[in-house]
Amino acid sequence: MASFFGMGRAPHQLSLRVTYEGYAKNPEDPDAPIPREGTLAVDWEAAEETSAVLERIDAQMRTLPFNHKGQVVALRLDVDDRAGSASNASASPNGGYAGNGANGIGAHQRTSSGNLLKDVFGAGGLTSFLLGGGDDDEASSADPKRPPKLPPSEGKGSGVLDGNPNQPVRTQLVVQECRPRAVRVEVRAANAGGNTVPASVHAALDKVDLTAVHTLALGEGCHGLVVDLKDRMKSVRTLDLGGGGLVAVPEEAFALGPRVRELILDDNKLTSLPSLTRMPKLRRLSAENNQLRELRGDLRECAELREVSLEGNKLTRPALDMKALRNLEILRLFDNPVEHLPEMHHAHELRTLTLFNVRISADRDMREVEVTSEDIPSTLAAAFGGARDERAYSMFFSLVFRQSSCQHPLLAKAIALIARKKRANCEAICNTEGGLQQLLAMVLSADVFVVREASTALATLGSYPELARKLVDTKAP
Image 1 (cartoon, rainbow, N blue to C red):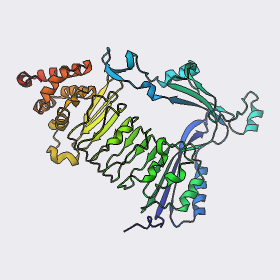
Image 2 (image 1 turned 90 degrees about the horizontal axis):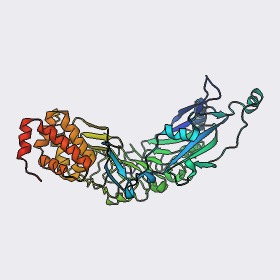
Image 3 (image 1 turned 30 degrees about the vertical axis):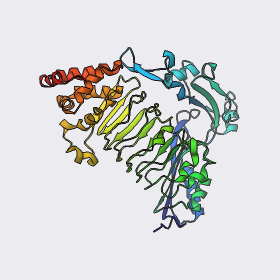
Image 4 (image 1 turned 180 degrees about the vertical axis):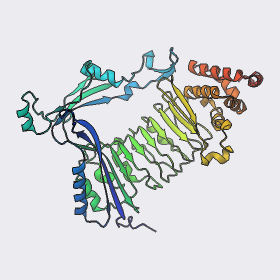
């Protein structure tokens, strides 16, 4: 039976949340405003008069703690990540794991913000300041040395570090009016289903300047707003459709096309994902806590993906083409009954991985790696036979030693760390089918980092006499 909302009837209740960023007055120094964030939140019944809703929005706007007078100078940084992608990777001489560009030339390394700002502004660093402030006429008479009000730059006058337009980091100083900007909009409708958006929602959004909005979050029944607002929301990069009870991703979601960098589909009822080729610039895909059983092969065309989060699904064979997705840095498969991992050799940038009940995270050069395990999720407990501590890593070892994925540097480091934690973990490695053979094979790897970590794990196992005997009896691969 179709819902009333799908037939054009309004939902019972509507909700609008708009997050603003701006500047508030500094009680200690009126000429140095404080960056501040504030949220306008309005809920209303569908039957409520639109005029009454707009009055409440106006009243809430007046309570937000922002300074609307004066000007600010903003520093914008444009970072071209493509300049930092590595074509291959190897162990660094100092023990870390570093990427090398083509022909042995080192790939671009991100500069820390402190050093970058020092290069731009000198030893003093960046100082936030307000030009004008308060009433313009009063300020001029009170302080004749105060700089005159400048015309807003509207994005013009960009500068480039070192004067080289090919640099991966470009800077731009922009003069802006000191007024709050909406950066996130969330619209939800209770008891909705369908895409008929009430007129009161459109009227409410007409009062908001959507030019700077970078995140759009929509609940069930509100997806049509993507189409309605796309011409007013040129800056949107994140589309959040989480928690909407979706069984399929609505067609309206693709209206923003290549603008979308982040797509959030968490906490829905999806059994499959649609083709995302219409979002070629996608960098982050999150579809946690759904009912996904497989992935589409054309996900490989989203070559700019940096993060794929699929925790809490039913994936057994996540088909991810790591050669095409070679920029992937984060892969989350926690709480999935995974039986086979994708081929990992090309995932040189991978620094965060979750599998079963294990979480692995590392810094850029893999000098600092953290491995943690949690209680076996209830969805996997039956297959595991309990969550006893001495078997906490058994499912993890069974998977990573099943194929050559264990020769990925991140997994090799994790195996060595887990082995050093306690003897029970070493026993779990020895008891895993093919575990010792895979460790011995890792010692023969062409990757020095993998060889070192495998040797560390084997040395830890060999420190226990009973386990050393098993190593002696193991046939070399």
